[in-house]
Image (cartoon, rainbow, N blue to C red; front, side, top):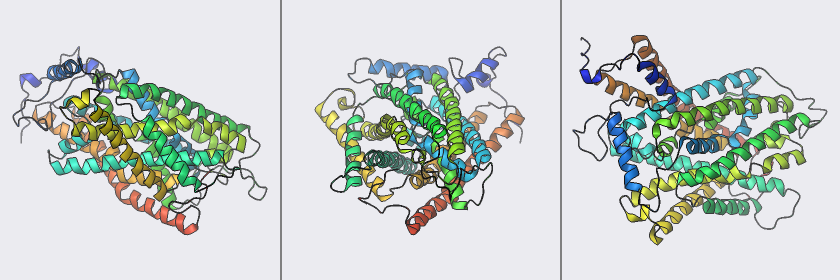
Length: 506
């Protein structure tokens, strides 16, 4: 069959503009070319014309105009504020699982995997951004899920369930870690009652209060300080790992730290868990549509993304490699604070307090606005300061924190909880969705008469099919390895049971 002829409307841009548009497709800016939609708007007419840059700009202008008189305005984030949100999401406690992952995988494969996963996540995040530009009415990843699967409502509900569970699991992780921190600080104190459960309730309560702000613009200011304190925390831990005479738990029988460039006697399930831990720390696309939906100019999003990705690769690699080099295989804990002397551990761990609280709040807010916006769509309770609006917002958040507390008690161990979240949810939101999004956008482009150079087109097609297959690996092999890892830990008696009162301190 012959290739369709190109229509005048879809002819390539003038030669002078092409380099600018190629750069803008990667780095953003005013020269971004917006392609055709893959579907009509979810609530729009079936004969809706494909969006171009002019209609996209008009849509954003109308949103800003409609919000101008509201008491609560949502499209208020600059690319700098969005960068703060990304830093707060990615520069987090999970960094301290990298030394453990490197001890399992070996230093060389660990560093290579760090770079490869970062590159894939950067690419899929750009695909996500381009999708959001083509469909400016998108509010969150659930809208995208419905669009990707041909507008079927079941896809929206399935995505919504995974979306809420993923976010609540992350809140649960931070409840778990908050209780772990308090137990670490009070290890020598006599605490009455069921200490770990009590500490978890206190952390969940504090998280609920801190997550009450209703816009990302407000949260971005908190996110900046959260990321800064986390950076200080992991840098101190890295320095202390080199300064201490021996890692925590050192004995002459175990000897000096053993560091392997390549894996040695690593069980398959443990190796998969280490890979999932690295992937989990990088994968955060589930929140990106919500962030983009609150930017004043979504074309600037790649600036935020590149700044965060460069910082991630440097910090994750340096912290993981240096701490592993000084701690070694025998004395490694996860998070790696437990491999430090008591004083060093308490000092560096204490700087992690803002991110322990804030990141759980960020995901609670993403879940809260997802539910709230749909309950009060086109209502004054969404845009004005009303008793009903604020009471509902607080009630929704409280429900997510109660569920997060329950999760923290049922899966009360750090590495396995990371692996479970990565295998069950990141397979979709980190890989499969964006491979499918690329294929759908490619089809829409070709239908509109827009074609890439054959070599680049074939390479991109192969890359995105590979991304989908990686997601399938996460969902199948990854889930099996994660569940088996939990069973092994319970069988070995190395973890506390559900709702245990015993200390989980490092």
